[in-house]
Length: 344
Image (tube, one colour):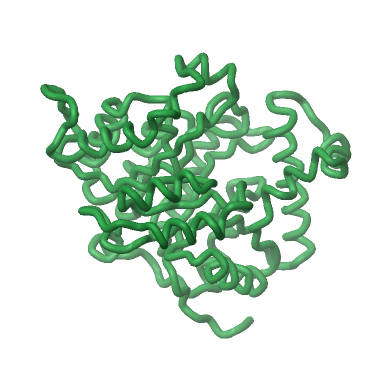
């Protein structure tokens, strides 16, 4: 193995709380706790969880509840949302939820916010939202910021808990819209390049060019997402990669329906399947050395200040093993102290 060189940017984890094939949702939550604990021990900066609804393979729909559970079973690692889909909620509700988390777990909670519904149209209506909910996203972000500070924008209404907690807010996105908003508000920007790679370079460039300093952040800060599938041999890693592509066919093209590997392979070979292959453009797949080489390249390519890694392997044990291999090959040295791990 090559000589280890310490990673030049912090590494974090995006955990989709995957419900593995043949497993239960409870097992998914147990896997999330295990991954967070191991990530903490290895020296990853934070673990984030994403809000999705009506997807049988993802169990993080009640995102703040899952964060609370993982926080109670870890000690120092930062935890947060990657992200909360704010159009699905009132800003006051999210301020209260994350104010509660920040009060219970001081200096450990992040609040990443997205504009998409995180689900399909029918489920969006079941959430009591409509097609115009995202139109007020910029105003809703500012209202939420105010609830978490000491300056509510609604006279006589305060977030309790929430007021004065100043939970750090991140804007998540996969387009120029999120980049421009994050720059305008002076907030950190996280790009969803693990599944929406196309606009990465122009979005990051726009964000850095148009960034305005704020009370939260003096200089632009970019987090870019990348998939990692590490294994002892390249053949094993490629087998894992194929299994992940098949699972994404199920998740995105035939959701909540039985499917076979043969059916998934047929879809992957069709024009429709190109969407799945495109989603995984930024994926480090292979032995630890090959993964490190790719991660080093991607850090420069994305102009990132931090990487957030998703480990899409098909079992909890395999996801932890990928996390361990990546940590070893980039030279993570163990858990950061509270002071060292405070946010930007």
